Length: 454
Image 1 (cartoon, rainbow, N blue to C red):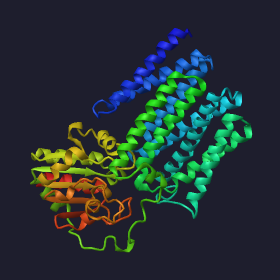
Image 2: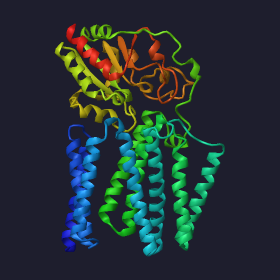
Image 3: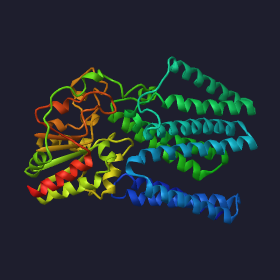
Image 4: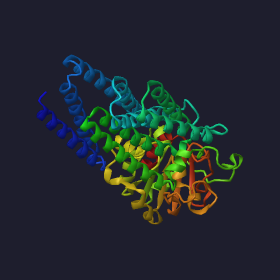
């Protein structure tokens, strides 16, 4: 392929990445942005393979067909509840691919010092991202416990491991040997496992965002290794956007990234025998339907329980039934609701809930005090008033949705079990809170019927 044409196509791909990423910032343009970025990646991949004559045209077409088929099947068959696991797996494959590219280049020829530096960085970040992402996948999939998993002296072990990795990295840059390279790779794979296992389910949205950033940085480093400008650009975009998202997520949890990566939070906090022991006001579908139908405004707070029950479409039906009775319905989205960044936005978008009904925490919070009913569906920690009132709570200081400020708060939940943080929720026992214990889909279906009959 002509070098000038190759440069033009790479520029087209880079512009597609940037414009696509920009369009992802709005729910109204996100789908088109995703398509545009995918087209850019296709252009970049084909241009690279043709330009360097790496494989034949047949090989390129076979790869495109197989990859497209796998992607299409996964996109259609993966349930919305499994989307966080899918994202975690994608991060792992991305990091692993970057590490393999760098390893191949090292085997072929270690190159000059600057090349060896980028090889070490790509293998280190890519290996950690790969194993760390698959541990996150296993936690989210329930293959291992979502609670923090650690062993005595683990932080010391990880510290020694990190120092060994740093030492090997320096030695590889100065005087590379195959033995040191493979030991570095192995230790990087190990620390990816040992650093993610101690992180609890409450921090998984942050972990996924951070690993996404890491996969981008690994790709950018691999781009320097093989001299691919378009890979550097795409990796840098993913890395930068992932780090920005990680920063937003940790602020939304009143945490620090170091605190999250240190692990140990979520799943076991507080005296478990005291959780759910106080009296609550139980409500039936008919009780809640009357409360909702005669309200002027309702704010819905979706949580992971909505995703687990796959109740987003029924939720939209309930909103439509209320709007037919001239009730204003809005959705309040907490940044860390669910198990991945933007989980609730994606969930509601799948049900075609209008974008103008979705509000983020900063925009909607002041309106709860002027709202008749706050309807919480499957959310827990993100509506826990202990974050404001209990200085001893592990979530103290975390910005929450102030649903307790509404005239009435209705909570749909299977039981009084704690959320990811492993602590009780005082919201459930307040005078103005009605508890409706049921599966989210069944509860919402009953409410749709009951509201229509009011």
